[in-house]
Length: 308
Image (tube, rainbow, N blue to C red):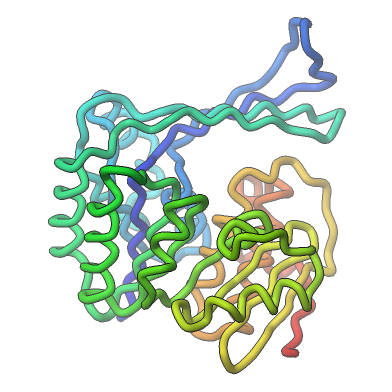
């Protein structure tokens, strides 16, 4: 039976402050939500909403570990938490949402939990969890510099022990993990794709496909997220494009890319993966996971998908 394992070494608390008519130099009334997050756990949360059991592995700060357990308690039975404890506190990422202005600001703090010691503990824990039936998603920010060999070591172990290794990161960490090859899936957005190939990629299908083709000797499937335009999946043998026909009011785009990937890996083929990925990403943007079930949401969203 397939087991999905999400792995995050830069976890976070997502603090979302929402209000109307937010402007600089003003006192504004807002509502606040604080959730266990980070890109890897966003995947786990989305999979749980869809009813897909998964394992959440990686790092969490020991100072707020018990708070994290309280935060994920509602997901018990669907998310098996296997974080190792690292010295310190987990960072907070703050999103300010101006509802009336339909805009948002993201303030990201640096994660300092990854060390050679904590990464070795992650590697050891994962070695006891994964098997050839596992899909392992290595997701979120990852350290470079002196800790790059530790990250590469985890990735190489996963490639040896797991059935599929998926990477969703950005910047130097995404590039060095792609360069070592042997990955099943990556999910860059347009900016991340441009960073990977070292030049700007236009938001046009042909340009995206051409850019993805340059990396297919190292990655089996490249899923490029395009925001409201949907996504394109490229392999050596095929190209698939998908977008939502259904529209809705965007509440926040935070985590939409993570939901796209969660939906994609939950299915057995590219077409079904893109359809499910677009549906859950759209639902996330519209704030539906907090209001309705996945069963209800997927019936309301129509997706156009085609093979090129």
